[in-house]
Image (tube, rainbow over all chains, first blue to last red; front, side, top):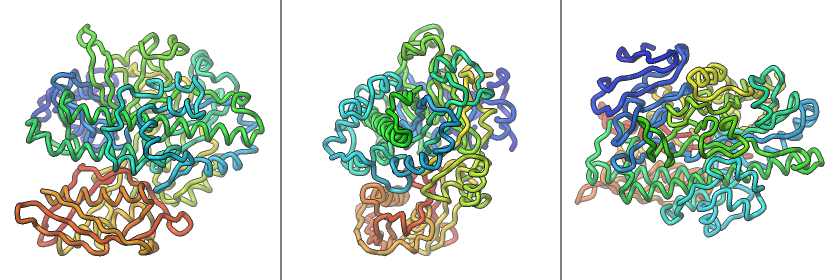
Length: 485
Length: 144
C-alpha cells in the first residue's frame, strides 16, 4: 500500500498528517508506528485519523496508536481529547462495546502444576463463563437490580459478595465511573443486557490461561512489583466489555445524535459514524451519563467473570482463591471517554479524552495510580492473538504526549471473512493443541477468524509503544489454555 | 438470498453487500446476511415463533439501519434468531417511510445452530442504500 504523500516523519516512531491533508482538519493527525507497522496500515486508518482531526474542540492532535487499524468512525487505536466548552462527545470515538477492557489475574501456581489439569480447567471455565451468540449470565438479575449494577459497577459486586475490596483498588476508576445515571439509558438497552452479567461474548473476546516464562521477563523488578515472582508462574487474562447493554446505549445515542448534530448544532462531518453532540449540550451530557452506565456494566461483567474464575480454580485445585494467590494485577478499559487533567502548553486543563481501542497508560508518580504502582507506573495489558501471546507493560512518563495512552492489542491485518477462507477452525484447534494450547470454543468459524495470521506481530506492537515512550515491556505472557466465544 | 460478504472495506468487522429487485427484497436480503453472520447454515433456524416489527423513519437508509438493529436487539433480549419472511415498505404521504416486517424464527440452540459470531451493532461506516442499475443495493458493516 502506498502511504499518503503528505505524511512526514516527526521522530523514529511518530508520523504526522498536516491539517492540509483534508479540508476541515482542525489539528494534525499523528500516528505512532514503526516503519513496518506503518507500511501494514490500511489507507482507511489515515482517512479516519484525519476525520477525527475535524471534530469540533479537538486539542493538540488526533492520535493513532501502533496497533491502529481501520475501524468505523475513529480508527481502532484512535485517541482524541476535547475541550469541554467547544468540544464534542462522539459514540464513534468510544465504540459500540463501551468499556471493552482487559483484566489480568495472578495465581501462585506454576506451569508444571497447571499443565496436568489444563483440560479440566479449560472445560470448567467454558461452562462457568457463558460465551458466544445471545448468551445469558449466571447472575439472576431483575431489571430494577440491573439499574443499581450500572450505576455502581464493581461496587455492586462488592456489596453482593462477588468482589474483594482490593479488586476495586486495582481496577481503573476503582471499577465505577462516577455520575452514571440509569435514567439516561433506554428501556431497550436495559432489556437487552440485564441478564448478561458474567458473559464473555464472542469475536476477539477470550479468557486465557497464560505463563510468565523466565526468558520472557523484560524487567524483573517491575514484574515482581506486579506480582510475578515465581518462575513459570500461571496468570489468567481475559478480554470483554459491556455486552448487549453497552452496544444498545451506543446505538441509541448514535441515532439520537444524527437527528440533532447538523439541524440543531450545525456540525457537518465527513463520516456519519462520527455523529456527535457538543459535550455541554443536553444530548451530550445524557450520552455521557449513559456511557458511564455501560462502562460500569463492563467493570461488573469482568468482576463477575473473575469471581467465576476463582471458583473454578478453587474447585479444580481444592484450595481457596486466597491460598492460590488469585489477586488482580489490574483491570484496564480500552473503549471510553473520560474527564481527565492534562498539561497543554504547560497549563493543566480538564479534557474529555476519547479512547477507542486504546489503553490509558499512567507513568510513574502520575495521579490516578493505585498506591502500590506509584513507582512502577500503571500496569498496561495488551492482548495478542490467541496463538502468539500477550504483554504486560508499565506506563511511562512519555505517554503524557498522547494524553497518557498506549496501544490495546495487536491489531488485525486480515478480514474475518478472509481468515475463515484460509483457516479451518477444527484444524487450527488441533494444531494449537499440539503446540500446547488447549482451546474450547463456542464457534469453530469464530476460532478461525481469530487465527494468529490475521493479526499484526504483537512483539513489534509492544516494542513500538516502548520506543515511543508510552509503555515499557515487563513480561510477555504465552497461552496454554483458552476459551473463546 | 442475494448477498455476499466483502473483504475490502473492513478488517476487524464484517461487511456485506445485499441486493433486491425491490426495496423489500433488499431489506430481506440484508436480514439474511445478518443471520448468516451470526450462525452457519441459517436454514436450520426454524420458524417456531413469529413477531411483527414496525418502524418509521424519514430516510430509507436509516430505516434499514433501525431494522437490522431491531433484529440484533431480539438476538440478545430474547435469544431469537429471525428470518424476515414478509417485508412491506410504505412511503408516507407526509414524507418518510413506514416498515412492517413479519419475522419468523426460534431461540438460539447451541446443539442445533452453529454460532459464528455475536453481532454487536450495525455501523454507519461505508453504509449505503441505493438503486444501482435498477437493482436495490445496500452495503452494511456490522460491529462484531
